[in-house]
Image (cartoon, rainbow, N blue to C red; front, top):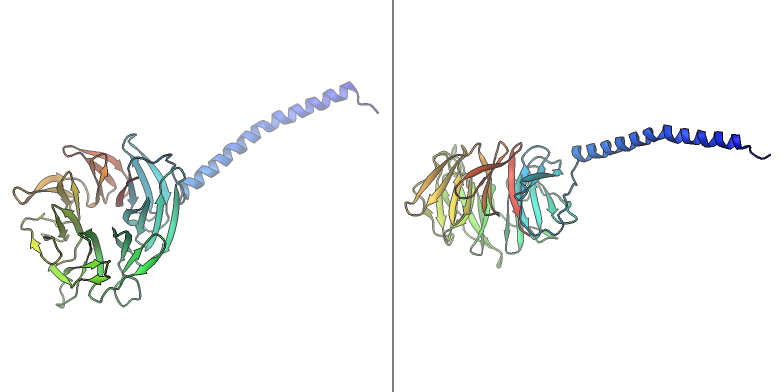
Length: 352
């Protein structure tokens, strides 16, 4: 039987009413889905990347020392920060660039890499052992040091060529590797040395490694406490410790040691060469610059909490990150705050 015109109009009207009633519900569901996705990325953004089409300029990357191991990136042109996500590992202790990738070493021994670009990506390199204490690029390879003590079965020092890991031989005297620096074709490795005297702290010792013939130098122990900083400046390698009235030495070959008479009152935590001058900071966050003419450290004032990292290579600025989370930049004259986060673990500048 043919459908009447009145019946068709009723059905059309009913359909219209159903659609109009459903529309708010559809909009609500779309908004709800967006909130869920956004919340997931904020709460668990371990693989979040921030695209950079055509990476041609350096950027500052800050690894936080909190339990979530978050990484933030700073754009000095826009003066804006962006989060690269929480890596859900216990604090970032070291960071370095190797090739085009950034390597972040965590307190729990995990290493993760981040490659900036149009399709940024995080990648885990697994648990390498105990706390990552130092990372340094030397002769085309990345060298990674661990806190592990000999006799525990853990690796102390490894090299990585981008695909393969190799454990390097270390001896029983190398208690804990604290800092490394490539200099004059050698890899200098600073560590807490032998306990020669009961009740006394381990000595500040170093050896240097030459990869071309896979050889180690003999042990040198010129300081009374373990090394905390190494930097190349004025044709020499500078090395220092962080204890009260800590000492600083220099060497040109590794076999010669010269003691610097002047020293910061609260030891040395970091060194960094900037604008052909050597900067350092002590346990209290006071910054100093070395004066070659007077052979003394000039006090630049208290820059906040204990400085964890100093980096250069971005916009001709010296960046300082302290334990309270403040990032300060210095242009040779003025100090300005670039950011304030929760505890700086380490910083690195990515060079395209």
